[in-house]
Amino acid sequence: MEFYLFLNQNRMEPTYAAEGDYDSGALRFGDSQGDEYAFELIPDDHPTVTIKGTIVAPAGSSVITVILRDVPSLNGTRDRTSYFCRFGDDAEA
Image 1: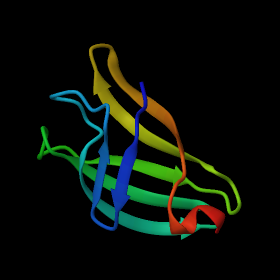
Image 2: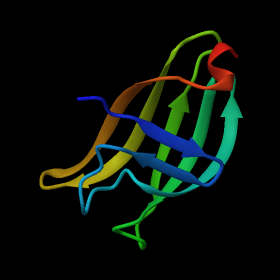
Image 3: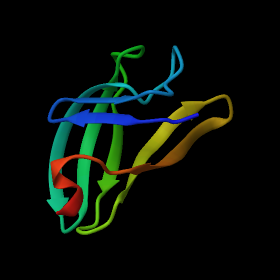
């Protein structure tokens, strides 16, 4: 199976998101440092929760890393890291 991350200035939506999960929703970008971009995600299924995270997108790399911090789980909160191939006009940036 292939999984994708659709990302724009105000929305993050992975194709593998399960109902009730915390990785799809409204996005607010914060500060950036080099190849790292901070963001806050308000999940569609949990609109009262804000998940902080980081996107690491090194210039010239075809891989981006998405780190969601303190995602609620049955055993407390956990960081969740996912990797995606970069496609589109900025893939060579």
